[in-house]
Structures are given as C-alpha cells and as structure tokens.
Length: 269
Length: 269
Image (cartoon, rainbow over all chains, first blue to last red):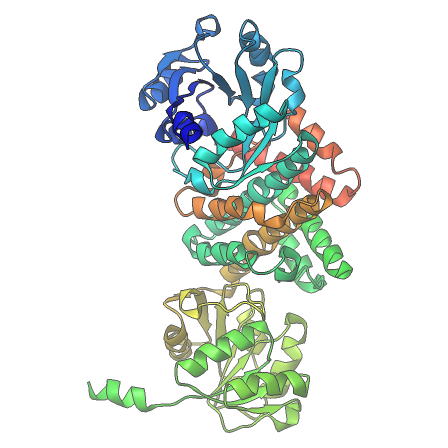
C-alpha cells in the first residue's frame, strides 16, 4: 500500500523529440495521464511551439538546447532521421531512459549509445485532423533489460489498455502487416474514390461497404470473409473490369495481382 | 389518401431465382417487408429448400417448374449463368417484371427477352455467416422504362433507405470501385493475417487499426488519410519490408505496386 502511494507521487519528466502526428497524439495522452512534459523538440520552431503549448511544455528547435533535466526521452520522428537524433541526444544523458516509437526500427539503434532504452510502438494511423482514442491502441513494448521493459510498459499502460511485449524481430512483421491492413487497404479506398469520381458518383456511397468489410473480420477470418469475382477467378468479369482500367496501367497491374492473389488464397482453403 | 391505402393492399408475388448469399439476404428483407415470396429456385434442391423455408415459399430445382403466377422475378445468381437463366425464365412471361442484382452485368441482358425489366444492385458484401442490416445498403436501380424504374425503386425503397438510379454504363465503374474498396481491402487484411500468423501474433491486434482506417475515410478523403512509408517513398523501409516478403513473390509484387501507386498519388496532391 505504501509503495503504491509512493509510486503515484513520482512524476516522470518527459522530453518529446518530434512533434508530428504520432508525437502529438501520444504527447496529449501522456499529458492527460499526468506526466510532466518538460520540453518538445522539433526541426521547426513552429511545430515545436504548436505541440508544446498544448502540453504546457517548452519548445525548442535546437538540439543543443534539449534539457538534461528529464527522466525519459521519447523519439517520435521520421525513421530516416532517427539514428542521428539518437546519437546526438543520448550522449551525456546516461542516467535517462530513451524510447523510440517506430514500428519498423530495431531496438539496437540505441546500442552503445545509452544504458536504459527501448521501444513503445503504438500501432495506429495518426492524422492531424483526426483525433483517436489512445486507450484502444495496441502498444508494443521492448526494453534493453527487465527493469526498462517494466518501466516502459507501465508508462504505456497509463495511456493504453492494450500493451504487449514484442521483440524487434517480430515487430518487423507486425509493422509490415500494419502496412497491408492500413496503408494498402486505405489505398484500395483511394483507387475506388478515383473510379467513382470519373463517373461523378460521391464517395459516400462506398462507406457502408467499407464499414461492413472492416466489421466482418471481427467475426470471420479475412480469407473466409472474401467475396467477389476473384475468389472463383471469374475471367469474364475480371477481363471486362481490367479493360476499364486501361487508362491507368499501374492500377490495372494492381487489379491483376490482387485478383491472382485472392484466387490462389481461395484455392488453398 | 385513397390511392395510398389501395397501394398498400397490393401484395407483389415474387419469385427468387437463386439462393446464394445475396438472394438469402435480399429474400429475408423482402419477406420482412411483407412481400409474398411464392417460390425459390436454385440449382440444388437443398439450397432452394433451405431459403424457401425461411421465406414460407415453395422450393424448386427445376427451371420448367418455375411458376408463371408471379409479378416479379428476381435473378440473383452467378454472373456466368445469368444470361441462360434469363432466356429460360423470361420466355412465356411477357406480363411480368424481371430484375437482376448483378453489379457488373448490364440491363441489356434482358433485351428482346422481356418487356418490363431492370436492375436492383445492392452494393454490399454478403456472407452466409454474417447478417447485414439491409436498410443501410446503397441500392442502385435501373429500369427498361419509366414505369419499371418507378416499380423497381419503390420495391427497393421498402427494403433500403439508400436507393439511387444508376445507368449500366456507370454501374460498371461503381462495381469495379466496390471490388477495390471491399474485395481488395479485405485481401490486404488477409495478407496481414498471413504475416502475423508467421510470428504467432493473433489477428485481433490488427482490429483497432482496421477500424480506424475505415472510420477515417468518413471524415477525410482516402488520399488525405494516407500514412506510412509509401507516401514519401521511404526507400530504406520499403526495401527492408520487401525483403521480408521474399518467400512469397506475388505478395512482394503487390507490396511494390501498391507502394508505387500510393507514392504517385501523393505526388499529385
């Protein structure tokens, strides 16, 4: 009981390195959970200030000015700039814990640069104009040692109800699966929107179908839920539909490959 | 007022030609709306009987035994068998109205075979194990003449709150768009499921992401909602992810084409 009470009195000081969509959503969730966000770094002062204001934090666009007076540093930036930022920030802060949030990047990025480090990957699609409920987001955690794993997962559990441990090796596959289930599924919506626009049909008519397609896989495995001309490879329909795509060869190739893949999956049942 | 009362007294006699997923869902909706489903035809007596029982109708698997004592015949069968069935059934029933439900098939299938005919395409993905709310399904209607168009749309409006007229020429594009937004999006889920299975990660972890991806396009256009490595064509991530797909070349090609297509769409913004 005493330990619990004591634990609740600890206020972690957090620095957010990054102010993009993920940093914004996670920063807000951490702030709401009572953490002390002391500073927000971003390449531009404008975006640092925009997020810092919401989190009652200090903004900076100067790496040299990132504070040393914090417990946890969370890197939430583009994959391409992550290694360099880690090198810059971890130096001289050996008593702190460092976390990155990138699904496709390994924990090893921190190796030799910090003592306590790990990953907190919230698997969700974040856009600036669309609020999400962080509590529902599956968060995947990995730590440099047991203590750090516990620290990161207890931090994750204050903002999400769905926290799991996952190694970098397995997270690579999880992130790739997320690219298919989110980015590629969304691109299928985008290609549908292009086709409808050609005939001045509003995209809204597609929403009940999109919703039901997503709802279905809560009850059925995706391959069981599959319908449409490709399942039995109905060549008559498939050929006619491919003809409609003659003006966009890349979309036509996508149609062909997807239909072949659906059919080969159906044959394996 | 009198006309309304009179209209409500008319009970249309309907024959369902077909007993698959769409016929089952639509048959139930029509039965619930008070129509008299007099007969259900299917290639096998088993499936004819299964649906007929639910609709208090007579089952048959013999085309010769399809009744002439009905007002409306609804064809809801595989595209490949539709022309032949239409030829067989429409003969000798020139005073009836004939409707097919196939998104990709033109109204012209009936030409020269019937006088009053049309299309009622309910754009949804139907599976036997998953009930759908027919009221929410967008239904696209076309008729051989104004009277038939009105007849089919008033029939459609008793089972759906979302009825529109659409020509066969435009419906081809709508159906193709539905293949992308439903069948191909669902296949993206299936490919994600395969990847997760390789690492023994339960598919359930993907559901919040799938739901949010679908929810997002209620507020943002799909190309605005897009995230992930392909938008800026992050070659580092894309190359590493393609390597993970070396064991399945078709999936790898899909990954490549989709990424290229997402990127070219992002450049057009």
